[in-house]
Length: 65
Image 1: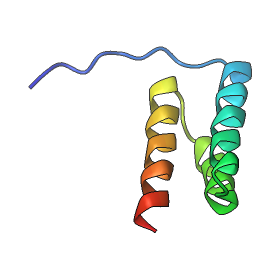
Image 2 (image 1 turned 90 degrees about the vertical axis):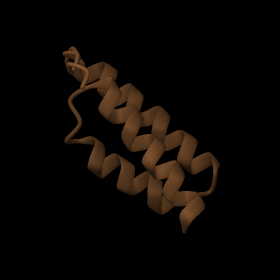
Image 3 (image 1 turned 45 degrees about the horizontal axis):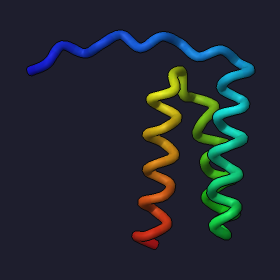
Image 4 (image 1 turned 135 degrees about the vertical axis):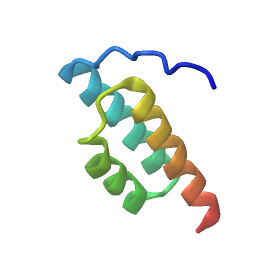
């Protein structure tokens, strides 16, 4: 089992920008509901990695739904 690497926190401005860009991607794909959900769930993310994982899960949900 690999040791988990510490991921540095993300600044508020950077987090807002990342969330804005993620929502823009989902909106460009016509996924308004997923973009809204992403914005809500992203509030609990504390790192870039968590935000990226959340965005990927939203994109996967698009294909599953």
